[in-house]
Image (tube, rainbow, N blue to C red; front, side, top):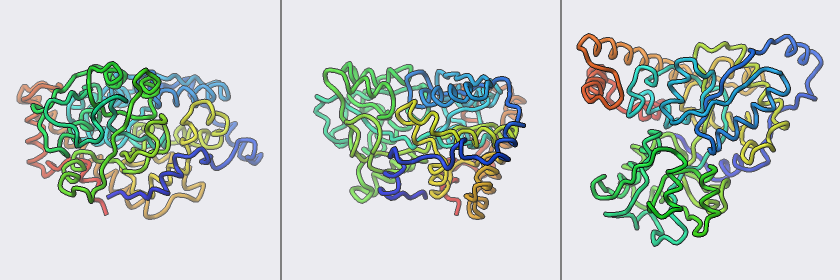
Length: 408
């Protein structure tokens, strides 16, 4: 289980975090070594839609990177979380933003991940973008003061564009011991609409992040917004267990960043990371991660939350018991800085073995399904059932996130 002290995460959310070194402070030999590296002519960075924090962050650092190196780093916003994973897997993008909950759902091939292109894939973490709070928001004039005021008939935004947004709502309902049929799920098509319908009064509750542009827009509206506190585990251990069984890969903490209305509110937080394919060129990953660290001062003020894109936050991710494996190029850079440890490597080896086992299992399941004439598409119930049965037959029916959490 991952653990976090409030003091530790509060420090991560502050503007005081900076990268380990600046380009101007590098030795002449290091400059000469970097000058020999030939950057790719271009590469794509897959992000969430325009208006999200991770899209804005990617624009901030990639603009500075392209200006300095003359390599073309293009930001490619994907319409949903399933597309981000698929574009990384198929090579449409070299880098894609995923947080642990995305990664777990992909490895379980749930919802829109149950396809050939978006399904389980051996991707690896290159760097940490942000430590992002996620919580439940209502309009400022709402009668809902806590999650316990949510009950039968409550209108809840339900965004099918990303599995972790759906799971965020399902976890809330699990905490309250409510079924879908007992509330009114208002389906929305994208991340922005997920928050906009709260401001418009068309839904009562949504699951979103206070770092995102839509949250700033909603807070600035005539009715503003409020955030609901995540209860402590001790308040109701059974309810919390139901919630956490679904909502894996998060760290509860007091929110320090984002819209003013969210600060001081206890929410779940996620380490959001840029992933690359496991077979991505290690030299490219090493050089790019090194550039991000050594040039952090050149872009950290170009976006509100860019100060969190630091090696220190990567170390915090590792110290908590990292939930996704790192790419060897990133490990090389951390090792070079004296930050990689034997304990990290032991967990890394377990995560890599688990990932490769799951990818192989999925490939075998797809081959077996094709032999039976089953279409491998999201929403095709015969395929969904076949995959669930196949996992069970091979002793992997437990959710992927639970298996990761069990690593000692």
